[in-house]
Image 1 (cartoon, helix red, strand yellow):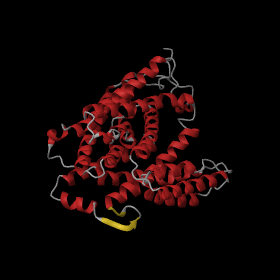
Image 2 (cartoon, helix red, strand yellow):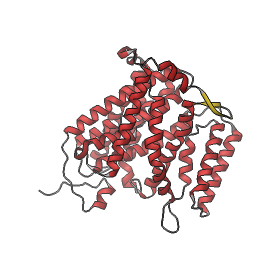
Image 3 (tube, helix red, strand yellow):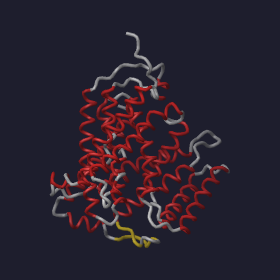
Length: 401
């Protein structure tokens, strides 16, 4: 097992452990004290928002680093990685778009389009890459490298869509002056890139200032992470990559610190209602959106794109393995919990219901995906060389026997 696979597995395990701990606390005698701690106001007064709660500091502050990492990964993959060519983009983009649209439609159908619940349509649209890749790492040879590359690439496109949704659908009461300041900061950062600034310190200062400006503007401040990442230079004159350097520097802290911390402060929900609570429209819509919507959307799009000739099947994969990957896309967790809090900002009961649906749908998707992939048999399709293997989507014909 490679170091990357081991790291992915451990990150997924830590996230699972943090979510489990949050559930235990929420269903223990300490639930009231824990909730009071999470909503205690700490730190300096922030324009428009006053003092952030502990939960807000994690969700609005620390998670900006998660989105910075997402943005760095998206830029690198788009310019020189798995999304660098139109052919490589075709299959994951089609699958990701369908995998966001169908779950939203399932959610709206289950909730009956109720006006009070409509804002939650995007909750089941996201995929949690840490959980999904962690499960693939546990499967070892049952999940070929090309399948992991496909899943990660779908998740990258999915992240782009989620950021656009957060910026467009969950922005309230814009402050024009603060928004203008944010745009000015972005302009300065773009200028630094164009004029050859390759040191990371000025960009990190710009990121911090951009976060403050967006926080004051009404645009969700975590979007600052993605926007700032897009201004980081990919290459320096000496051939080094400032972007890769920053990505490698923050990756461990984000995946082993920020993401599990977010799971700990966000995943706690009372299970006292049991199946009766899950049967309510909001949690049921989220759960079915993730479990049914994702496998239908992603799986159907993969099948249709490959069958029609629009895209090629990833090397060495079978139809059963592609279906298993589509199931794993139904693990929403981090991003779904995040969007759930944005969708119902003044309704703690709705947020808890969305959490319940997210946990149920993610658990079903993860277990089903694991079992399908565990039983699937890999089809041999050896690439010409290792480099071609990493370019993915290259299996036109099976090898001669």
